[in-house]
Length: 372
Image 1 (cartoon, rainbow, N blue to C red):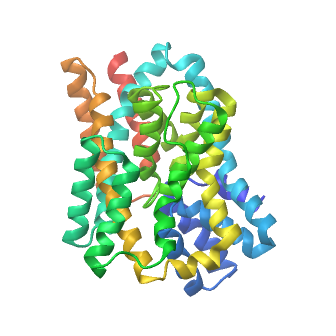
Image 2 (cartoon, one colour):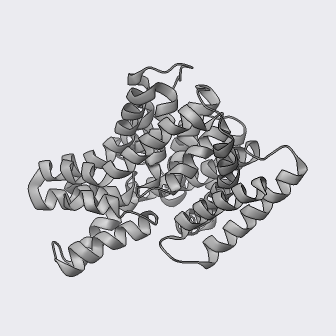
């Protein structure tokens, strides 16, 4: 019940969500010390997955062991999941043909484009502190534009940075396993994916989501739009817009992608696969991962992978934004105006409700401009 309440109040993205958890559980109730919280947060910032959700699982583990971890994680994600499931059903049932939904999403799309640009900038500012990582990000972006498989690109990025820093290959099999683990998920996507396949795509996404929920975009977009073709880029952007107005980790847009791929079962499968690593890292081996990520070589490999993800998400996001632009010139000008306004608000307004205000405001502005 405690974490269900947190989930109902989880507006404003990961910074606001983490701040809420820290204020109540660390500052006020002192479940753990501030120093210990900072160390735990550092671990989850290195590992893939949404940090706020992983922290909920961790605090549940502190309170009641593994059962507490499962309940806390489920409680935190349940409100957003149910709301996204409802919005996905409404979108499929009414959104595609409904003029009201059409004008609403007309405003949403440039706002989401602004959110992506701001997030790529924020991720790059933290993940690319030197010229080598910038070069790796650039080369991974070029490889993505040339249609090189992202698993190959990310593995090469991690190994390349390890070579740059150490001038030798990572000495332990753990490093190779860390990079090759996502390959366990199937790489071939079917136009009508099975429930098991959707779970596999979600699992791979969850294992490769470094640096925030926006880094999940290229992996899900690759499976659902480029290869599987069970949704369009425009629909993908719509899902991102819907997730931005919900009290949940932004990665909950995986529920929307799964619903369009396989209905209720697809939504459950893809969401479960995406969130499973966030549960598993704590329930099965938080202390082990805490030791591993302190290993300098593993940190170097993960830094390279994260830089590769920055290049990957930059190119993929540019492709998504380009494909979502309206064809008519007047609509293009209005889209550009909404995009510019959204970008100004996101850079200048530091409130935890900025993302919600931008998405809702853009939807209202787009609706009014087309109806007037």
